[in-house]
Length: 300
Image (cartoon, rainbow, N blue to C red; front, top):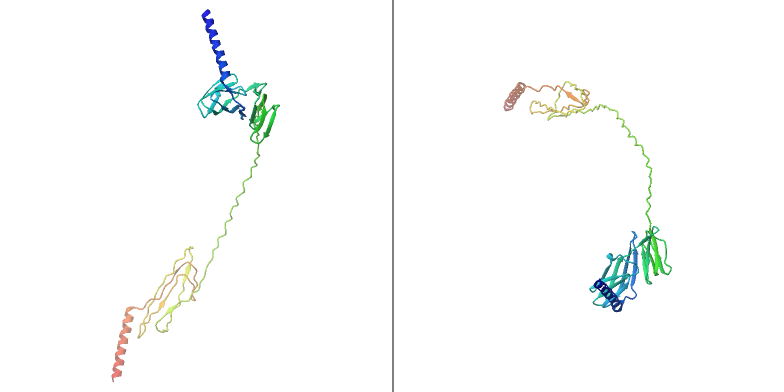
């Protein structure tokens, strides 16, 4: 029992001695730059920038921290330990250290409350959807913009705030149905049937002048459909006493001549019969005999 009491006394003595050594050796950080940012979710984050010296430097934390969130960054290797509200940082050289941590915010009567316990100058930055319910007594600067609100004050102070709940607005739009525009029904155009009568002369081409009496021919056509049949051509050839005379007659299947009347459509005609071969031979023999007689008369 006596040995246990001695052990406890030894441990207590060592702890007290260690604390006395730390308070004697450690330097205190001077004029730290402190910024507290409250985001849209109500979380407060503390940022401290200060100078640390060779050995151990103590930094007073303005707000009680959540220890697991503490981060220390510096240009040299550092180690730190938290004792109460003071952070002790061991460094092998003089450097600038940045300390960041999440503040331990309490809830009082349904409101969020942030307690600054140290007499230091603090720059407070608040998001637009945070409603500030209390203002520090020693306010040094105040500015509010569309993006944030900035307050510079000196502690100690108590900050109470809440989060603004966005309201949802429902807009009802009345839509009036527009009746469809009736489509006009097209009126069919009347069918027009026209008969075209064309008068064309009969063209006769002859190598000599002949006195020819021909029986007039009558052309008659009947329209059976709207299809127009292309014209057909017929040629006739005749001979005269001395020279061969060629007469060409052109007959069109769709026209009106001086002999008869024709409409557009299918036409039929009966042409004159050509001169037979026996008649031509008789004429040639007569011409040869006449020629021989003329030659005999001339020689006498």
